[in-house]
Amino acid sequence: MRLPRRRQRIALHASGALTSNALAALGEHGFSLASLHPLVSVSDAASGARNLRGAFYCLEGEARALRQARKLVRALGGQSFSVAARDKSLYHAAAVITSGHTVALFSLATMLLARCGLSDTRSRRVLLPLLASTLANLAAHAPEEALTGTFARADLTTVRKHLAALQTAGMRDAISVYALLGERSLQLTARRRDKFDQSILDEIARLLRRALNSSLTG
Image (tube, rainbow, N blue to C red; front, side, top):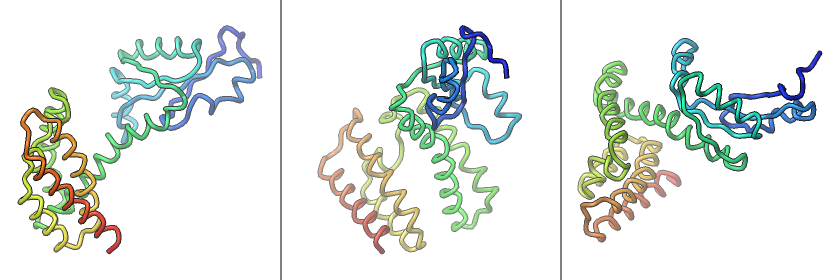
């Protein structure tokens, strides 16, 4: 195979999990290497292709390849940012938590509504506007101010009711998720402008830790 002239040798891949080093074999032939990962959710080819326009792209790699990658991003009407190779897995974990884990959480929420008698289709229909309003809040505010509901109010009584209901339903995975994310929500609550009695926050934290330990060992 005839290789392109050295100044034209650019190789890019679009993996979010792998660094540009995945193309190291081409690097040995004079290619400049980079990764160019679109930060969009792709569940099917048609909508995925449309979503590539105007997206954010995470870039990592060598300077010459990065210059070409930025040109590609601009041609797609997108924006780019860069991370070091050592941080690529941490970056990708953030993407998975934001996208994939949100889908998993949504699925868990629909299961809870199924216990309330709603069909899967109806559950998705009634929860999607709630999710959309949360995204709108996040677009307008920092996470601690976008947080609403039980943990934003430091509502100890309601947390107890939630955990009791999940325990009665026998949903240990839901208890684990509720407790872990509840602890994170408490950290956000502690940073809010409207301050709460620290003893209440501490009691909620203890309650969540007990619930988590019980769900993991029970």
